[in-house]
Length: 492
Image (cartoon, rainbow, N blue to C red; front, side, top):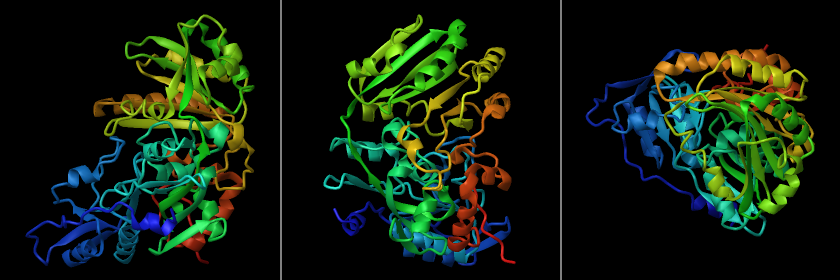
């Protein structure tokens, strides 16, 4: 299918004005600007916006406002002045032009998650792409056009229908927009590279509200930047992804050991994992059950049959005395959705994580010591293996700067009651304080909770100055600022 045909057939939302009925023409919508200044939006201005789009404009008095304002992470309960539910790229462009001309702070909500809560804002505008989820596979080129509001499940299912796949996270209702512009870790990244490595090009709405293409030939600077630079440079409304032949049946392996064996298991894991082939994606975890029972586990995915998996993971199969030890056949698409309920919308989430370019001899001890001294039911820490094809890409080939990462170690917590927030935040932050001195490789920009410029500069490493140049060219006023923000150079 040609790109123009794909766009013409894209999902649209039936327009029905949600502008509050009976509001007098003299009434105005109170909003905030990029610098926190107060902005007044006339009823006519908002009504004209509604008339210009296929989707809908949702205000605080609209009947569906409470649903429209929600994001995945319940830790952030903000109240935007306006939510624009976009139906297509033209709607996105209109929303950007409106926010820009009326000096309204804009947040972008793609298809799903936002650990940092930056997909919403108090008093600003949310540009919501959630209805834009169409996926279209071209079996001839083994590629997929995917709209910017799609979730990973849309990509997984579309590819699997044709025996194709590409790297796409770990939870199926994660939004592709944030994942593919920020990095794109997943079960297949050692074999096929990061999600952004398989981005062949994008359609994007710039800070001026213009619709442009970015790929290896058209606007190559922008194409470089959106592969790792996050939402700093525009709103991606369509992605073009490379897919690969893959049997939808893969293998899952899981080995759990008593906590008494944790130190030996952890040392074994880091030695064992270093020799694993690209078909193996693995992680190590220290975890307590809801009842407080502690354990250490090694688990992961193998691209191949259980028999092939057993041969590949070798020494793990016969290691120690696991309380659980199994290799099973698994449908990849089903596996991708297995944790969806755990990461359900509306629960509370927080993560502190970093990349480790080497494994210090002290690492297992430091990980285990805090875990044992601070027994939190459902608390823990994990180390996810990186490397493979994702590591064989030069650091400056894309904006993503963490090609040398061996592991991403994460203290990721979730809970259900707001009154428990301080307990979990303190647990994860204090755990990370003891881990951070051993982390040398920065952090995953999509989980940032420290927006200081010096931290972002360090995180983008040698790519930062080039990102500033591109930001200054494409977004000189920093319109797209709710992200791991790369600030444009100020005029002198």
